[in-house]
Image 1 (cartoon, protein in one colour):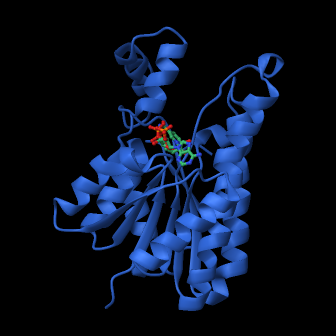
Image 2 (image 1 turned 180 degrees about the vertical axis):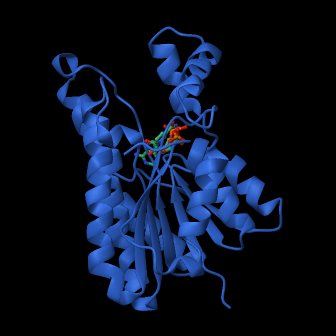
Length: 250
Ligand code: NAP
């Protein structure tokens, strides 16, 4: 079987880096995409060091021209991308009465517009190849979370986008699913602890106490779920939202 080409956005660190590394291990050629191509070096190294194929690609997923150029670069250097993981994300938390226009626009722009632009660019290759897998990173915050009106809206929107992609692209052999993680230990959650002035260790312990499996999540927990959803054998699973949260979230 020919090697499949995957693009993982926001893959310089955190969950995206873990997903890219896992897909490299599973035999995909991986485009490691992030704002700054140089920042992708560590993830690329973790894949090529294990004998895999990886390419660092710099692009802001919220900018149409950058997305079009990035997907074209991947197609030219690795081959037609048929697997896409929309993982890039930012936080601009604030209570609604203090949330600025920019807090709103930038979060919606990276998560929601970014996932739309990337999906639109990649589906051209997927429909041509009559095969594809799209995984969008949602969040338990999609169910509503204090201080995250922008982020919760974007993450709920990712679920609507996912189901619509599944409906529109299914006849081309393309599935689309969302992963909605709970608390995962990354720079993003470390920054949240710092913002509320709590040591990260205390913050993590507090969250773990409320999780049914008694621990917080690791990027590899999300990567394992993504690995299944992008596999050949997951071809009859589409339009689903999988909560990876150590317990029921919805
Ligand atoms: P992270 O450690 O902050 O990593 C996010 C990555 O996305 C960074 O490398 C960042 O680059 C990149 N990025 C930001 N804006 C971008 C843009 N416009 N274009 C391209 N790349 C961009 O976050 P994470 O915790 O791994 O989260 C990954 C995804 O999972 C996000 O969508 C997040 O919302 C979701 N999620 C996380 C958790 C959690 O508990 N951590 C829970 C639920 C959902 P820079 O370093 O240059 O900013």
